[in-house]
Amino acid sequence: MTAECKPLAVAYIGAHRLTTDSELPALRRAISNFATARGFTLFMTFVEEPATAPAAFGDMVQNVWSDGVKTVIVPSVVHLAALGNPVVMKTHLEHHIGGKVLLMNAAS
Image 1 (tube, rainbow, N blue to C red):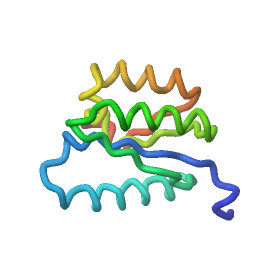
Image 2 (cartoon, helix red, strand yellow):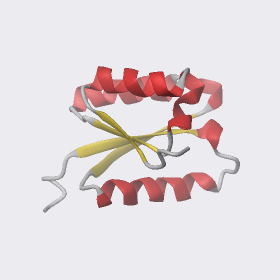
Image 3 (spheres, rainbow, N blue to C red):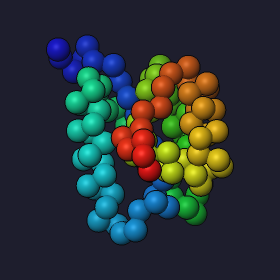
């Protein structure tokens, strides 16, 4: 299967969940590997910085709508916590994109 045939996914990372700057590159690689292993092409990664929240979330939703992406990958549900109740935010996001939010680590 070529990259052109794979469905697109975007990723959302809440930087407030990272303890060091060096974690971000490793997390980006892990998300890319996760997407590839599940048959997606990772189109874009949105990183939410605490000082500008919820700007990255808003940008992600707008891009998902305009590009027709139906899958958002999040490292864990706690990455949505800066936006409100993370379980509610996951459900809200799925409703608004008409797709799925995939959690890399459903236990966190």
